[in-house]
Structures are given as C-alpha cells and as structure tokens.
Amino acid sequence: MAQLRQDFSAFVAQEAVILVVGPEGPATFKDYWQKHSLPFVGLPDLSHQVLKLFGQQVSLFRMGRMPAQVVVDKQGCARFVHYGDSMSDIPDNQELLGLLADLNREQLKEAV
Amino acid sequence: MPKVEINTQAPDFSLADFNGQTVRLTDFRGGKNVVLVFNRGFT
Image (tube, rainbow over all chains, first blue to last red; front, side):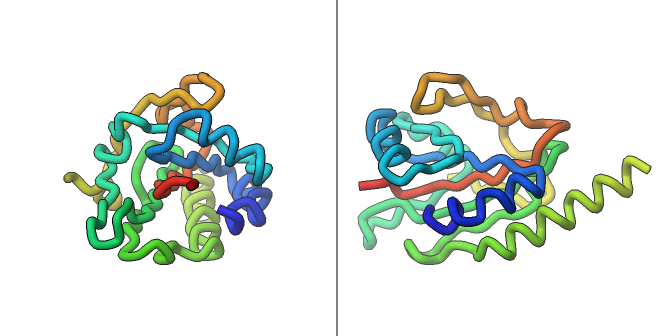
C-alpha cells in the first residue's frame, strides 16, 4: 500500500483510479486511511461479494486472503490480472504503469 | 471461485466506500482506467 501511495501521482498521470477492496469494515478502512494518509478509494467488502466475484484466493495455510490486482481499461475490459501466491506476491508499480501507458496509447490510436 | 480472465469484460460491482459514497466499476467506463487492488486487510 505504501508503494502505491508513493507512486499515486504517476497512476493519476496515466488516467487511472485506484480502488482498494478488502474484507474489513468501514471503520477499519477509515482508521487505516487516516493513519497512512492514503489518497485512493477504499471499499470495504464485508459480505465478500466483490472479493468472490473477482476470485480472490483464500489460503487456509497462510490463514488469510492472498493479494490480487486487476487493471480494467476505459472500456471495462480486464487487461491485467494477477493473483498472488503469497502476501508479498504483488506486481511492481512500474509494470502496472507501463501497461497503463500502453493502454492509453492504444486508446489514442483507436480514437484517431 | 471464478477468476477474471484477461481481455474479457470485468464483472461490474457496486460498493459503498468507507465514507458511504457508492462506487460502481462502470462509473469509470469511457473515462478512466481502474487499478483494482484486493487486499488481505489492514490489521
């Protein structure tokens, strides 16, 4: 989360919004957001409806949910999907930013 | 549990943010790319 915050302006420059979905309740989200001054959108998913919809994995061995990232383009199409195998298995921001730059270039070409 | 396939339409959803404001994935269609981050939690 700290890495995402650090590169937040680069994501904004690539015309991206960051939505963070988690199984905690609104109060926990709010506390965490305030404590860490997070600039992105936090979406509590207590009923796990979206976590299930996107297939976030639960590891009984590791006693928790594994991280996942999905990049959705401006047409609503999933263009990057990563399901982590461990808590530290998350894509590098530069990989995501590079993909977003490619998507924006594609969309510009299609618009011409 | 379904996994989202790359290059397919992402399933739409609607959730309230922690301030109670409703956010739909389709709110961003035609305007913004969306980076969805699924976390374990914050505690």
